[in-house]
Amino acid sequence: MRIFLLSIAVASLCFAFASQAQAAQVILEGSSATVTVGDVISVTMLLDTELQKINAAEADVVFPEDFLQFIGVRDSDSVLNFWVSEPSYKGNGVVHFSGITPGGFVAPKANLIELLFKVIEVGEGEVHISNASVLLHDGLGTRASLTVSPFLFASDAAEPPSVDASAHEDDELPEAFAVELQKDADVFEGNHFLIFATEDKGSGMHHFEVKEGILGRYTVAKSPYQLKDQSLTKKIFVKAVDSKGNERVTVFYPQNIQSSNQNNSAILSILILCVLTLLWGWKRMWFFRK
Image (tube, rainbow, N blue to C red):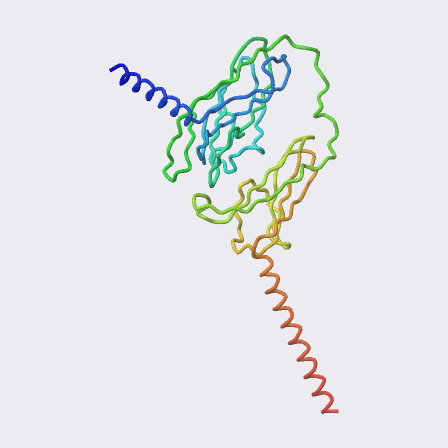
């Protein structure tokens, strides 16, 4: 009987460990736990998928407004590349976001979003997560079980203000970036779309612009960007513009552009042959008339 009870206890313990191992972990990691009034700190929301494939995440990041002032969001390094609801401040100390990753991902430390705060008061507080939801990439939208960890901080008295490094002149281009072509049945009704992102360490990124074809016009765009030309036969230009107006352009060549160029070359060759034939015929008629 004792052996039977012991077996049940061991099995229960193993099941508990297995269940815990399968629970995805959401962690808020700050740039520093000890800060000073006036400091700007970053708090990154990380996800350990625990070997599960995840394709969507949603959460509210809650912070104490008595101690922290929300400044903004950095999402260029986010593993979520399609925002259903872009990260934004909703008031009452809540930043909400919702996004997906077509095809899903598995990672021990995936960056979801990075939030920037300014410390405004002396004391202790925490940034925590509420209403978090992570979906498995199983075609059913199954919710993964979650464990969450807050970010705890303590702030000291203010120090003399330092020179704002962002006030200097910025003549540096945004960082080089790649453009990816993707297609997913769950996004843009299965149409082709582009994904792109970059950073600017000087004045910060302002916006992106996209131009389809050499004769096209640049229009302000966000990633992911649904292509207007789904034939993939036009050269695509993606322009990153920082807050000082510095620009960097990445040129993307779709998969069908080579065959399109070959067709255009063939058409041009036929036109040239027709013109030469007409000229030869006209010259021959003029010779016989003479």
